Amino acid sequence: MSLPRLHPFRPRLLESLRGYERQRLVRDVGAGLTVGIVALPLALAFAIASGVKPEQGLVTAIVAGFLISLLGGSSVQIGGPAGAFIVIVYGIVQRYGLHNLLIATMLGGLMMLVLGALRLGVLVRYIPVSIVIGFTNGIAVLVALSQLKDFLGLQIPRMPADFFAQLQALWTHRSSLNPYAPLVGASCSLLVLIWPKSYTMASHARSPRERLHRLAAHVPGTLVALVLATLATSLLQLPLDTIGSRFGDIPQALPRPEWPGLSFEEAKQLLIPALTIALLGSIESLLCARVADRLSGERRHDPNQELMAQGIANMVAPLFGGIPATGTIARTVTNVKAGASSPVAGMVHALSLLVVVLVAAPLAAQVPLAALAGLLLVVAWNMGEWHEFARLRHFKLPYRATLLGTFLLTVIFDLTVAVEAGLMLACGFFIYRMSELFSVSEAPPGTALPPGVHLLRVYGSLFFGAVAKVEALAERLPPDARVLALDMHLLVSMDSTGLDALVQLHQSLERQGRRLVLLGLNAQPASLVERGGLGALLGEQGLLPDLATLQATFFEAVPQATPAPPRGS
Image 1 (cartoon, helix red, strand yellow):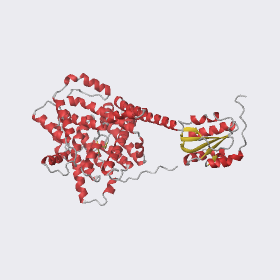
Image 2 (spheres, rainbow, N blue to C red; image 1 turned 90 degrees about the vertical axis):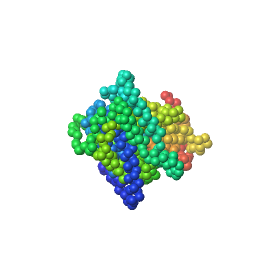
Image 3 (cartoon, rainbow, N blue to C red; image 1 turned 90 degrees about the horizontal axis):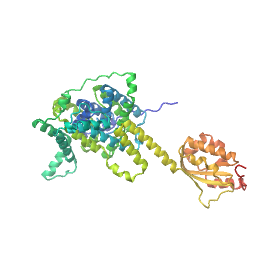
Image 4 (cartoon, rainbow, N blue to C red; image 1 turned 180 degrees about the vertical axis):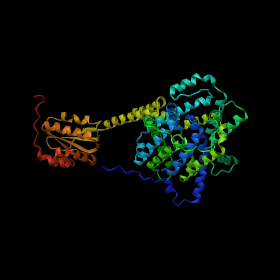
């Protein structure tokens, strides 16, 4: 038995640097700096919302972001902490602690690395879109819910991870509302929503207003909102919680790498959290890479190389205290729009964040948490595909049930349960639909058949969900039929259960003194029939290429059939 062939480790960076020119370097550096500015507030916000220190978000964006661009299979994808991970990370921290989060992240990274090395990255694409939409919208709801505490300025000592417990905590502490917090948070949300985002809208700007619009579009609205909120809080002495008041100052250096202790018992209990991180990271990164391909027009990304890079990044970042990382759509889109042409832009984005940490980290301590909550509410809104709920009426029950089931299970339980149940629903509905598509019908009227030959046409896929339609054929034949011929040129595939059903049909017919003939088998069913021994049972006259051969073979070989004796006589 040969071992599976591993995917070659070929980062897209090596290919991108061939013929790399100064003009492309200037574009990539500019794009990297732009994305770095966008990533700064998001890295802080995602870390705080995940229940860890803000510097851990920055470390993740720096270390994981650099490695994902350096080693990845996409030219323009940006990696780092993502909003989709907020709920997962928060739940793991609450249940297992920060130390075990780092271990689970490393184990999840190892799983992603193995998936990519074994060329299994393509399997992520087999997850139905209804499941992806369901859990994405569910995560968006949970992200928004987790931000209401800081958005409203509520004094809740420890926010629970459970959906209903969070609702109860918010309601119980509603009297601690700080009126300044929603004012600042809503102002930040509104500013981000209305801030100019198009770089091309004023490409031929002539008026001062158009030139101002173009200039503003190059400055991220998130950064503007944070700066204005921080200035307002400081100058007006607003009584709001800030990053510094809750977490202290952000260190002006990267932490020294430290290997987290790991025992076999810890690894066993962290298997499910690690699997969740690997699953979500794989889905998010490959979906993001597909978006990047479409926007940039670059050559299609290598999903297996991308998974290997994501895996390595998630194994290395926790050594510095980092949290899970994956491809991030908002930052990747910004990177493309800013003119990025190679992974160099993503590496510059990480290095620019490192410079910020080394030079300006203390300034972040003054950022009000209500402002970050306002930004994350916008992130949650943009994350969800809410229009899909309105489109549900255009789809049938299987799609609706899968999407809504995954959405509700994500909100009420967790992502792992939701995806597992969603996949089971999708598989169940798929089996049902495929079994409904499989059919056995009578031959068209007027078909010339030898005496005693009964012809049926088989259509679809003969698999375990459809064999009941074949098993009963022997009992439904006309009394004068001595040969049952199945025209199978429209049978596209067959599994071992379908083969067994044909064997049982042959044996039933043989006991009745009748025989089975298969016509026009396609390559896959024909191969299975031969390998499974049915071909030997049927003989040469049992496997015929077409109806003409059947007619030539049986017009003289089959005498006029006599009626079969009544059953039970």
